[in-house]
Length: 276
Image (cartoon, rainbow, N blue to C red; front, side):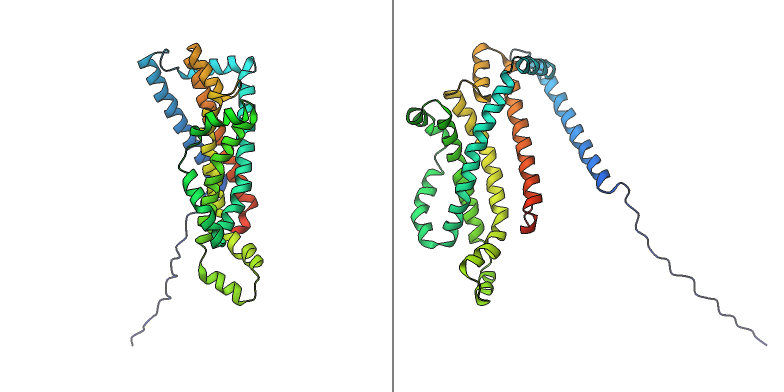
C-alpha cells in the first residue's frame, strides 16, 4: 500500500522595499551638507589663488572677511546694501507689474502685438548701460535715473516671457473653453493665466538677475552710495579687499532674493501648477 503525502505550498516571498530613514529632514540635511562641501571647496581654491598672486591682486578669504567687518563697523556696507536693494526692488517690481500685463496683451491681441513688436524687438537689444549717460542727463544723479534703468532692464524680459507663455497655450484648451460658453475674460483667468504663470515667474527671475548687472553700472557712474559705488571707490583707493567685499555682497544678495522669490512663487502660486 502506497501512501502519498502532499506538502503545503510554501508561502510566497513578498518583496519589501527598504524603508527610507530620515524622510524630508534627511534629504534637507544632505542638501545642506553638499552645499557646505561646495562652499568649503570654493574657499580652498580661493585661498590657493590668493596665495599664488598675492594681496595686491587677489584678497584672501580672511582679508575679505576683515575688510567686511571694517566696512560694516562704519556703516558703509549696510548703507550700500540698503541703497542698492531699494533701487533694485523698486525698478524690478515696476518692470514686473508693467511687463506681465503688456505681455498678456501682446500674446492675446494680434493688433497690439503688431503695434508693439517693433519696439520690443528694437529696445531689447540695446543694453541698459548704453542709456546710463542719457539717464543721468535727463533725470539727474538721484534715485530716478537708477530706478528707470532697472525698470528698463526688467520690463522687456518679463514682457517677452509672458507673451511667449500666452502664445504657447494649447489651442485645444482655448477652443474647449469657448465651446463651453466661457467669455474672453474667463478664458484669460482660467486657461491662459494658469498656463502663463511659469513663464512670468521665469521672466521675473531673469529680470532680477539682470537688474543686478544694471545697478552696478548705474551706481558707478552716478551714485555716492551703493554696492557699485563701493566697488568703484575701492578701486580708486587701491583696496582690493573692499572690491572683493562688494562683489561677494552682490552675489549673496542676489542669491537671497532669488531664493525668496522661489519660495513665494512656490507657496502662493502653487495652485497654478507653477514649478520654480
